[in-house]
Image (cartoon, rainbow, N blue to C red):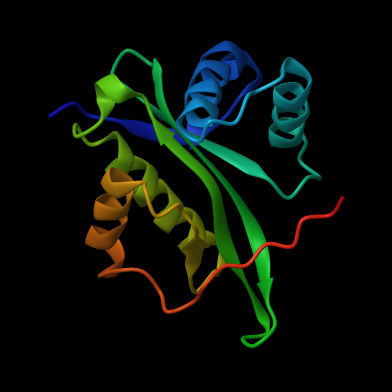
Length: 151
């Protein structure tokens, strides 16, 4: 099994990050415009923006996965928790430990930040992702997600 390191994105990661982000968007059939990707990239590099990006790198330093995470207030607990917005591992790196490395990095970040929990959503058809998440959580929560779209 390959060994992976996780770290926050840096300026020099943009082209490799973009390839991964495009793969993530393709998985969800969400066309990715260059302007949108540039906005997200700007957020990731802005120390004043809530969104942060972790990446998984293989032994040669090549990026093979990403995780976009942010602090999220949890009013019932009077604290922040971590919210994982996006996670993607390149198809050729799946099943080799890159996703586990990202989750380990996320758990370390949560501990460092004092987040008592990490939360995320995925779509019902993401069977491989759900099987991976089940290994960490024992299964989905009992919450149902609603979305009110604005015209």
